[in-house]
Length: 364
Ligand code: CA
Image (cartoon, rainbow, N blue to C red; front, side, top):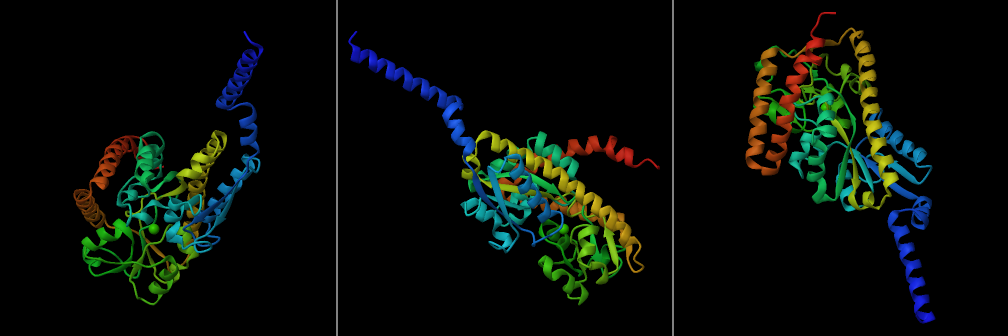
């Protein structure tokens, strides 16, 4: 063999070894990966400083900063600080920002079936939603739905069962809903209209004044904690439960697909596990703050807390089924997710009936 040929083979084998090292993810390439820092932006749909929701998004970003030893830094902007709140999904989709936090039903105009990944009237509570999303195939379906928009979703928080809302008169029968002007968005609003009510769309910032000045007769908001903070008990005295229209609203983290793909595996694991941890943390915080606020509201002399009458709830449930069937009939994508949701939900109901519900029904 000629010496130049031996040199060539040696050079080739060195090159191949180097390539192998690169492919295995060890050595030089990993060192480069480990030293690279990522500076991301996250926009949310919440007002600045909004308790639990905006605070939770900020805590999530800070936890990632700590866990990644500063390799992934996320600057969080509240709604309106960088872009208008309801442009969050588009900003993430287009890659203007890497991350967003909000709730999937805000994008119902663009993606109607997205509503199943936040909440639907008489749908599953937080327990059922977590089981469906993490272990029942729900998250895979959600990823499928957002894929054409280049957005990767994760559950990141849950409001728990919301309250039915504040009314300026008692609701004793379906007749009392007829012509009632209520701020109630989304599918809940459609159902309310079918029941003879008059749903009104209002931003959160306008709700208190509208109720106080009798521009509307009723409003829903979130739960005792956020409702009390907004002062709604000063504008109407009848506080109804349960929040049939929002039984456990899932909040979402959205990540631009290309940004997500650019992260090394360890940072991806940090993000997805931090999201799961914050999902639990926000829900727990909502529960604790709502129970404390309920106690305070009960002590306010003017506030009267009532359960919706059974026949009203039964009628709203029947109208919800009708509404979901109608939406499914006109949109195959909606139908696809609705069917998967219903299949899981029926199993969840059967199990809940003999576990959580049966236990809670015992007089203690
Ligand atoms: Ca609400």
